[in-house]
Every structure is written in C-alpha cells, then in structure tokens.
Image 1 (cartoon, rainbow, N blue to C red):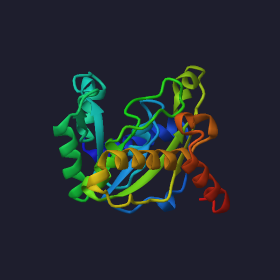
Image 2 (spheres, helix red, strand yellow):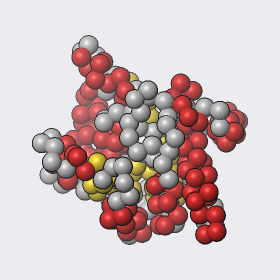
Image 3 (cartoon, rainbow, N blue to C red):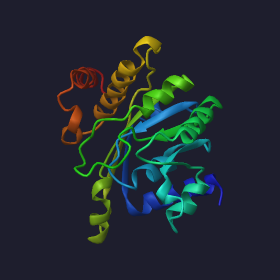
Image 4 (cartoon, rainbow, N blue to C red):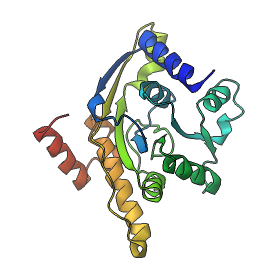
Length: 225
C-alpha cells in the first residue's frame, strides 16, 4: 500500500467510525515545508491527522518499540515513519527529521513526547523547537480532543466526536547561540501555548496559568478562527 492509499484508508475509517469536526482548515498550508505540532491524547491522534493532510510528503516520529509490532509496525513503515528511541537523544532520528523538513516536506509530532495519562498537557520537550530552528520552517499548531474517549465510546457501539482545531501558522524568532538552552525552553513553551489555545481549558494542564497562553486566548476571543 502507498501512503496515498493509507491516507484514504484513514479518512474512510474516520468517516465511518467517528464524527470528525475540523476547524481552521484555511490555516493549513497547501504544501510543505512545515512542522505540525499537536497535543497527544491517544494512539488515534496522528492517524486522524495523517488522513487530513493533503500532501503525501508527511511523516513523523514513532517509538522504536512499535517497529516490530504486528499491526502498528507495517502501518508506520507504509506511512514513512521515522523510528526513534524514547528516553534518550536519538541523533539519527533527529537528523532524519531535519533533512526531511529541509527537503520541503511536512513533519508531524507531539512535543510532549508521549500520551498524557491525565489527558491534560504535560510540559513539552524541546525537540519541536530544535527542529523548527534547525530546518527554519513554519510551525502549524493543531489541537485535538475527543480521541481519549474513542475506545470506550466504540465499546458502547457509538461514534465518538473528535474535534480538531488548526491554528494560524507562525515562526520562532531567530535563535541566539549564546542563549541556546534558555531560548529552546522558552520557544517550546511558546509552541505548547499555541497548541493549548486551540483546546478546552480542562486540557491545558501544565500551561493553564502560563501568561503567554492567556495572551493567545484573548487574541482568539478578539479574532476567532
């Protein structure tokens, strides 16, 4: 199966098994390169988003443990997933992602690094900010909710409602090498606040009281999109 077929398959399954509500499609660039960032609630998050993207040139990281999984392994390979070792700096996987973006493609990731057990946002890791700076690409924030209840809803023979908000793309300011560590941390918080501004307050978690989130929420109230 090609990635085009796989994307069509995900869209068909989404239409059949879920009520997918999408806001902000006008914010989605028609082509890469760009870095797609999203909060992470369920294993269903990225397949739903993968099906939504019009380009074939989209991939992301996947935990190395899934490479040998009988179901997820083949699907991730078909999608061109880049396998990464969690809990350590996997330089090869990071370099592959940078090259992929520099070649004009789309890379999707969840900056939290793993699914939140509470469904509220955890503090983001600096990988997304690093990729954005190294590849010098646009960042497109996605907010998703409803996937955390998908399995339990299916077990009740109902279709879950999955809501996706696509935010306005943005760029990070140029990185100052002398303040690299602090800047990556601050830029990560900036990315996470852009995501948080797209989802209901009960999901804000670590960023609930962040001043930057309050600014972004106010801006959305003034100019909803």
